[in-house]
Image (cartoon, rainbow over all chains, first blue to last red; front, side):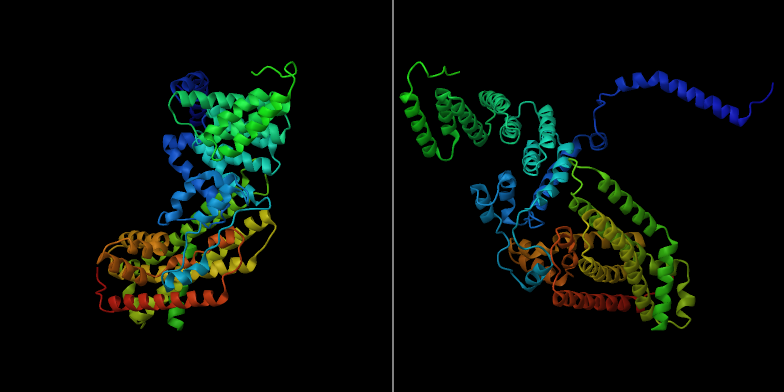
Length: 290
Length: 259
């Protein structure tokens, strides 16, 4: 019998591999529980990637402060867990409160500390002048590692809108909503985007109403949802209703907001004004409250 | 002096003959370029994360090169028995220590220049801004810091039996100083006596390598460190280098060379 040459054997093996691959490939995808949509980070790290997600979110905050950030040894570390300062501009109450909390360095304790301060950033500043874009890669990485980390979507969307990247912000929020369908925070951010950036109050109302429903569902389930977000959704919805002339509904929403607001007196004043407007209307002109 | 420089020349030749530097440089370049090529939200102006990653990789690579190169110098000479003809030249043990230090330190300097050139090109091409003086200052401070690292590892190489144990222990100590050195006084104040005094003494005793890490100033486009402070930090490093090399010489001069 004539012996097969090595190249012929190689060719036969290659043909066998190719044929087998065409048969097995469709079946192999079914063997694994892993979805086709899984990204490389999920494949590499598994659920352990969530540990790194928080690190990248903190890195975004560090970047926002241009490297001036408390270490685990500083008392102010706890203060940075409140992420509202990441979406607050100068002069806003959240920013002023944060300014006080971030004064963590204090006077130097010895000559080594005093001299060492010449080599790192010692003043509290926030990024400005469109430099806020520098925090976006860390937020994107954080969301890739932990798609259930809601702050990454809302903070990134806030700054994307601020930078005029409304389309990217909407896409990112939609991606967040896909991963977190019950998130009233993302729905609030999405509604704000429709209202403020896309000037589409009808869609904003729908999204905020859905957000309100999700918030109520979570409260009914005893999950203690964030009262501040309820306040924001209800106030914004009430303004929309007031513009549309649905004063009764606007009053109801402000009443709801009053329960969650840190300044209920101001809201009560608005409620009183709306009630006066409503009373001044002829009965036939008042639209039905939904 | 000529003897010291001749010994240093051999160490530098060893750096470019071995593959460590090339592997680390290629790894740094590939990771930086891959991260730099990723588009985040279609924004081409985002640059700081690339600078941050590149500088972190440069710091890790430089530490690995410094520790790896230094840790094997004297043990390799003893293992190959080349230390005997070397000392018969005649070369004193003090000159061996000085020559090895100078060689490793200069080799680290050459590696740093290549790394920073790459960093400058990547950063400048994306940012269209070339703060050359800042880069030079960061390079100088990092090189000065590596001087302390090299001297520390050289001392370790005459104290510990094997280069692997020396490398590991040195790496842990250096990383510990870089991460905790700045906060050790805060940690000390939270301890009861006498632990407080012990930790505070340790805080004053260790070389504060973290001073030389000015990556944040580069990443966040801050100004230069004052040149006076830069000079004082260099003087501080020189004192520690002298102390550590003197310690290494004290141990090495009485050390039997047979394994």
